[in-house]
Length: 86
Image (cartoon, rainbow, N blue to C red; front, side, top):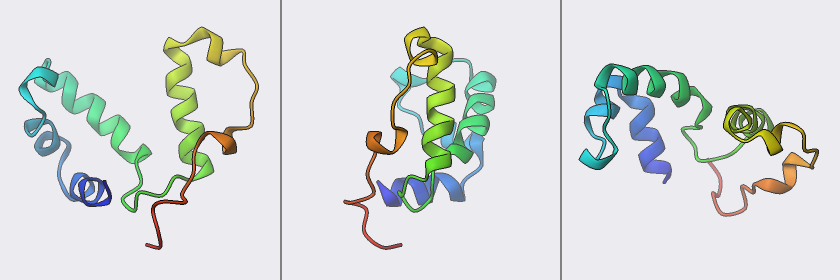
C-alpha cells in the first residue's frame, strides 16, 4: 500500500488515471479532475492523520446523510499501528 501511495504521489493525476483498471474508467477528464482533488487527501507514507480522517469524513458525508448528523470519536475509526515508521 505504501509503495502504491508513493507511486501515486510521484505521478501526474493523468498518469494515475491512465493506470486505472478498465472497469473503473469513466470520462477521462472527470476522472483526472476527481483524482486531482482526492490525491492530496492520501498520505504518501501510508499513515493517517487526524486531518486526513476529517477530510474523508467530510467527503463521505456528502453522499451519506446519516454521517452528517452523527457524532463519534474520529480517532477510533483508523489506526497507524500496522504502517510502521516512515
